[in-house]
Length: 296
Ligand SMILES: [Zn+2]
Image (cartoon, rainbow, N blue to C red; front, top):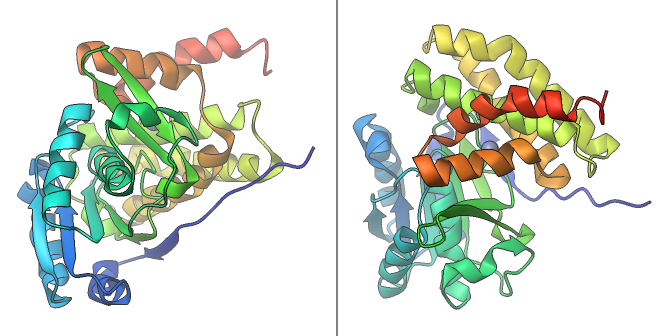
């Protein structure tokens, strides 16, 4: 059976990659840019570095720094209102999965009617979205290159996902230096998210030889470098390899999808506000045992 393998991101990878940002914005002829991040990114001094580059492009800049972990529909709609008011034409998302997912969701609402909840599912976004540049500061979710957004519905008390090839970030600026300030606990939790993506996409019944290659390669990298990155955050070889592994594994799971671990982990996060990677790490061994007979 013929199967599709979809990849659409343009990735600039390596030290000082952020210096490419002004040219990217000029290429889009950006007039009004929204930069999205959270308090952690601000405290680490990364927001400042990104904003300095955005300003070189000469566009009007609007900041949304109200990103929360496991972002909710309400926060998406609050940011979307601001973006519409400021007539944003390009988005820059800086941070982990929460910042990038929130920005992808806001971007949907720029060209598609609300509420955001109606796009939960696969391929339900009707209209193309605006340019989005993703700048990851963690190595885990792969949100910078995937077609997935995970949001929290506070009324139904659940997490749900929007999966659509239209919402992939157009460009990715991946500088391993930006992951250096992650404390060991966050490095471990986000890294376990990455391991879960590689494992679940590898054993997925939607896996193909192309996705399996990416999942396995990602897993090999994480196995070798995650312990090193947790032990010594300044180990730049480990930081670089973790970021690279997330991009590689992301291409795999974007196409093969995930499984029961993520299903259960999303429920744990919605009810107990557990960080996504921590929820995955908690559930992974039990689901592996449960699945073992079906995928020896
Ligand atoms: Zn995940």
